[in-house]
Image (cartoon, rainbow, N blue to C red; front, top):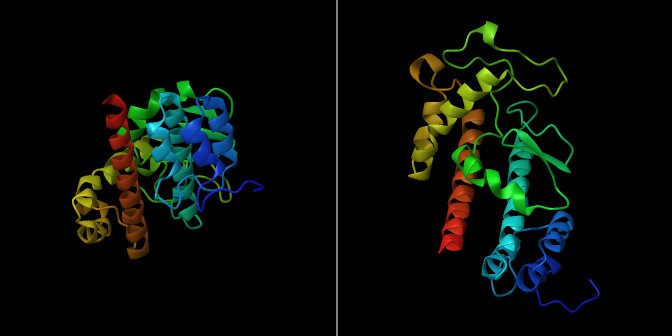
Amino acid sequence: SALNWARGYTLLHYCCECLVDPNIVDLVAILAPDLEGPDKSGMRPVDFARKNPEPSISRVLQKHRRERAKAQIVSKSDDGKFQGTMSTPPSLVKVGGRQRVAVGSSVADDQDFDAELLNPLSVLSPPKGRVTERTSLDDVALPRRGSAQRPQRTTQVMFDEKLKSWLPQVQSGSSDAVVVELQRPATEGGMGFTAVEATRAVQQLEFLSRFASEETESMQQEIN
């Protein structure tokens, strides 16, 4: 704050633009309140990172952007409407079945990147007490009131796959139709959501669609 930064240009912008040490960028990203804000020229930290000659700078920042995005999705869920799978403290993030510590070496953490894009809805869980299609009550381990226990994996996988099946329709601009379809009973191919739940689910699908599209573009740029 003692430096005369240009409007919107932060320490994170500077690190992504000028540094080649991923550990420093990792630390600054952990402490930065905003990873997405543009400077006065419209450049975000990720834009500078993609131009950085050291590819690990971009990978480190992308890791933190994914973690922040998933935390944002979970935080937007109302009292049990959707249960987030992030039950760990902020310094630990569960992705791809293993815990990642948000400090230290971060280059190797990008090994799960492709798998995460293939399953962008892994941060969502079925609403409490609701049984999805082809799932009997015997298959569901309902959490105790006030507990953070997630549903049994069989139910979670079915829920993820079924909800993810509407992602192409959302990406094609048919969000309104998806809201209606999600309110249909499970026996009719829907999810049995209320109007509020269906609207929130579509908003999350739209968010994930934009995020996945941007991440895919970033990967293509790195390949090129």
